[in-house]
Image 1: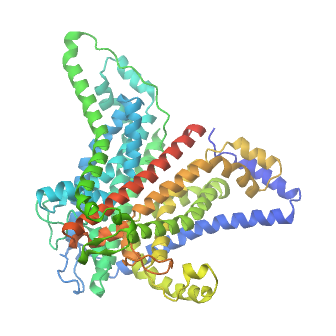
Image 2: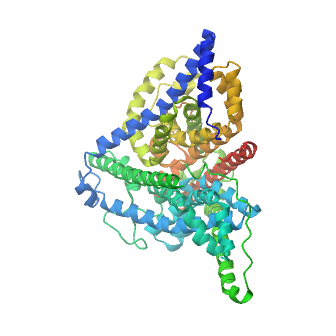
Image 3: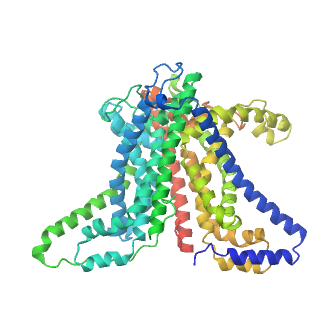
Length: 302
Length: 334
């Protein structure tokens, strides 16, 4: 029995209580408290509604095929122009970060659940992954700047990917870990009973069984990384034309473009900032919805 | 929030079979060991990265720490032109803006968590949760853009009105009076931060409240308690330590949040009690000035990053310790 089931009896009890003459003062206090709780919900949802409304209204002023496929104007005073280089940068840099963080994170979670079996070291790693998830993203940017950019004397898209990967790693570890724990012990035992080694069991039985949840968790991590700005400020710098090479030359992303353009007094720059915000929001929401669909399909199946 | 609300109850260790015979086994044993060490290495990577962050950033920050000494933390003279790097104003700004976020955001988060566990009809709970996830998914820079271009001008107008009303009220006039007010200020940054921590704090509190045993709630109702009395008597006391952990986690988030604050706090290194005036935060000043900084200036900004790292680590360790304890007590994972 789950802990959130008392609804039916609670409702009956509530109606009995109100029927049995609760004093007006108590009833008033109950009403005020209930009102305050609904007000709290409204206090969060109304700003969100306004935010989405403004992103749509201001973003659609410039959003379109031309916006998605034009280079960024070098002068911020220019009206019009596009964001193609930033879209390319966002997709490439986030994609590379995913390629780095997902395998490492999944294997890290495999250690915690399958090999560590909750020994001291596994618990420490799990705890540190939580701590690492709380490290501010700007600190990750400074970290990659000091160990990578300074050493190789180049700002590159790859440096940005490394910073984003650091950010994603703990999220992937914790998501994968919780999914691996849901895999029934019987599956592992059945595999062992067939004489399969532990590593083969993990690769062919445990991970596939948890795949849906892992994919969904990773998609959320990707969505988070795609929207990040702070770790990229001092790792990728800026570029106005498409740069498909992550290892050479500076790069840019939608988030970085929003940040640099938001502070500008020029109409053109602000328009591009809103257009980029709309594009970024669409990408991030697509990823989140995808994650939701994957995890729903998973729960439907099991 | 799958990463935060997972389960910690582990399957008991299952023994893998001992290899059937030595001849067949050697290759598979080697592969097995190899895979084990590979995954161990990935696990240890977390530890390595955290250690590297501490070591490399502190190393780069040393020149600033050396030239300033304790002034780095306790002086408010920040003057890159004269090589003066006192970071107090930024530490102050980080603390003040996240304090506003907590004061505004936590009651709202708890209200939402209670609506979702105790009040709302079951069929509208899932849609509300979807919308909260949407709020969590909005990138920080989009909050910043909206805050800067839409919210700040509107708020500035309101600040003026509040200012006029509270000008002669003692205590409140030091916080909200003073005649001056700006759209980008501690308070604007704090409000946006509040909005940004609501999803995490409310979703953690919700899972805490969901662990309250139904029997305790029903017992309260059976004694004739109203719903609010039941919440105060049964739900809140039971969930207190978990909520404290959730709030601390939110505090850590708020202090580390960079881009929205960098756009909204006003970038003015000053210590003032007036919440409607502009200030600056550690993360904000790093984001805004790092690319122009060289030498000791750059080192000082990295130093602020080290201070921020240290503070958030302490807050997060505390939060996790509290959450893990309440997890063990209630037998449910957070």
